[in-house]
Length: 493
Image 1 (cartoon, one colour):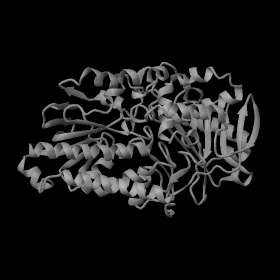
Image 2 (cartoon, rainbow, N blue to C red):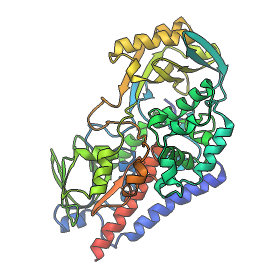
Image 3 (cartoon, rainbow, N blue to C red):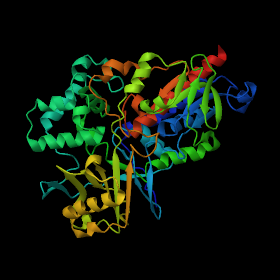
Image 4 (cartoon, rainbow, N blue to C red):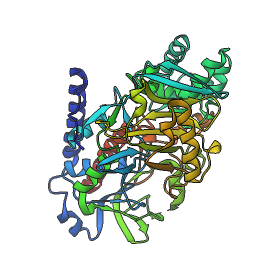
C-alpha cells in the first residue's frame, strides 16, 4: 500500500510544530549531566535503570523515543499485552490493507501526532464524507446531502464555545465556573434548551461518538474542556470536514506505535504486565512483573487511570490519587465493527457510507475504505446492548441494516471484524474516558502531579486534546522531559 505524502499545514502550524519538537529534545538533552547516559551508568549502579516506562501505547513509546533522542539509553518499556499500540489497533484485511479497531483520526490543531507521523515517514489521507448520508428511523429511510458534520444548532454551538473559553483544557477544575459546570451533565444543559427531537438527536449522537457514552453521563465541565482543546471551536472537535475526524493515517493508526517499537528494539518488553510497584517514595523503585523485577530511579506510568488499579503499590498511594484511579470512569468500552466488500458500491450510488439510526444498533457507520478504494470498507460504532454478541449474528444484522441503506449488495460482505474494547483483554477496560458530573472538581487536581518517583502519563493527562491520540503523544513528550529532569537532579544531588 503506497503512502501519500503528508499534506503540509499552514506556515504557522508548521513552524510551531517543528519548534515545539525541537525545543523538547533540546531541553531534555540539556538536563542530562555529561556522561550520565547509556550502558556505563547502568553498569556503575548495578541493575538500576534511569527510567522504566509502563505501557507501550502512543504515550509510553513517545516518551521512550524522546529519552533516546535526548541521549538516554538507560530505560525500558514494559507492556502487558503481546503487542504495542494501546488503544490503537489495526485489523489486517489482507494485501496490505487495514481497518482501525480503536483510535484512528487526526485533525486541525493536532500537531503533535502530525509531527510524529512525519518523522516516522507515515503518510495521511482525507476521511471520505462526500455524498448523501442515510438516516434510518421507525422502519423508514431518509437521505440528505452531507456537509461533513452532524448538523447541530449554530446558536447553541456558539454558546458552548463561549463557555469553553472559561475552562482550561488541561485543568478544567481550575475554571472560575468549575463548580457550576461540573454540577450538571451535558444532558442537563441540553434539556434547558427546548430542542426539537431531530436537533436533540444530533447533539446526543455527536457527543456520544466523541465521549463514548450518553450525555447524561458526561459532565458539562468535561465537555467544555474538550471544546477548549479544539481552540474553543465546536466544529473542530466534532466534525469530519475541518474537524478532529478529518484525516486518517496511511497504514492505520497502530503503525505509529509499531514503527516506534521497531526502532526501540529490545528496550520494549511485551507480555510483561506490572503486578506490583515498591519503594516508589524514595527509590530505586522496584517494579514486579511475571518475568522478573525491574529497578529504576523514575517511573513513567503511561496507563489509563483505571488500569492502575490492577497494580499493587507499596506503600499505598496517597488517598486522593488512589480514589481518582478507583473512581475513574471505565464505562465506555466502545465496540467497532468492520464490513469488507469487493468495492465501495455505495459511492457509485452517490452515498458517503454514513448511516445513523434513531433506534437501533448502529450509532454511526462510515466509509473506512483505503485511500485507493481497491476494496470497500464500512466501519460502525455500535450500541452494544442492541447488537448480538455472537459475531456471525452481528454481521448478519448489520448487513441487513446496510442493505436497507444502500441496497442488497450490502448483504454480501467478503469479511467481517468485530472488536469490543470492554472484552478484548484485561488491560483495555475502556476505550474512552467520559468524565461524569462532580468528578473533576473532586479529584481533578490529583491527575497530573507526580507522586514520589511516579510520573503519570497517557492521553487523559494531556494539556490539550486529552482523550485523543494527539493527547497521548503530547503526554509522552511531557513525561519524558520530567523524567529526564528528575533523574539528572538526583544524580547531581
